[in-house]
Image 1 (cartoon, rainbow, N blue to C red):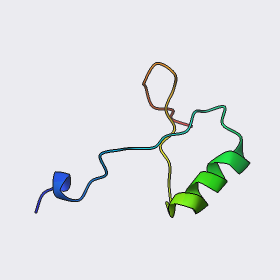
Image 2 (image 1 turned 120 degrees about the vertical axis):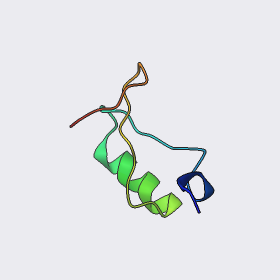
Image 3 (image 1 turned 45 degrees about the vertical axis):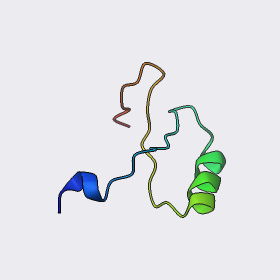
Length: 47
């Protein structure tokens, strides 16, 4: 088995300016334990 066999292909992200309550609601609705934080230019936020 390799990573692509189990990875999510439709990744959901939040932006660094997303309100915490919105991110928490999305986590709860989707049953996720984490959401990547992406910038508008497609980069990843380190904070």
